[in-house]
Amino acid sequence: MKLLEGKTAIITGAARGIGEGIALKFAAHGANIAFTYVSDSSVEKAKKLEDKLTAMGVKAKAYQSNAGDYAACESFVTGVLATFGGIDICVNNAGISKDNLLMRMTPEQWDDVMQTNLKSVFNMTKQVIRPMMKARNGSIINMSSIIGEMGNAGQSSYAASKAGVIGFTKSVAKELGSRNIRCNAIAPGFVETDMTSYLKEGEAADKYKAGIPLGRFASSEDIANTALFLASELGCYVTGQTISVCGGLNI
Image (cartoon, rainbow, N blue to C red):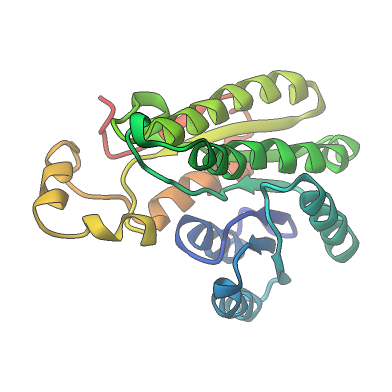
């Protein structure tokens, strides 16, 4: 059974990693996919993903757009509505980390992380709620992090941005619940992506895995499965929640 048949989903930062995994999972369940990437170096990856999604029998289009820029988000969503006709699901996945001890962190590093990880969530949510309110239906899924719940030395900017996503999610859920629009967050733990490639093996990997009750890092599909639940009717009575997909790291 396809859980998202005929739905249209927006996914930011989907040319690789978690975003790509979610795009593939949603397409496998019948959703049309509009996704963003930001850098010129990702053009080829984005085209390959677009082709792969289209080959799965759904409508798909890649957009080069910066989720941290309000005007760019406005233009992107306008284009999606013109091409796809509506928006049922929005996954705010775009994110970066610029880890540094606070005493060494520059204001520019802090601002970059906040703009990409937190302001982008405001930008995109602000744009998609109007068509969702008109349809009286929608699911917004914001990518937080277990670090936003626990904190971590050397990641104060990343932790603050992801904690902000959680507070934003709860507030939006309260504002939009009466319009049948759900807003939830996912807080992944360590996920095997390009961002964590340095942790795949060796002493560092062993150290982190030792603190995870399930004894392994998550795959992108682990996160995508949770996103599918929240996007589909399976999660129709879930809103304002943060689901930690971390293998028990936060126990």
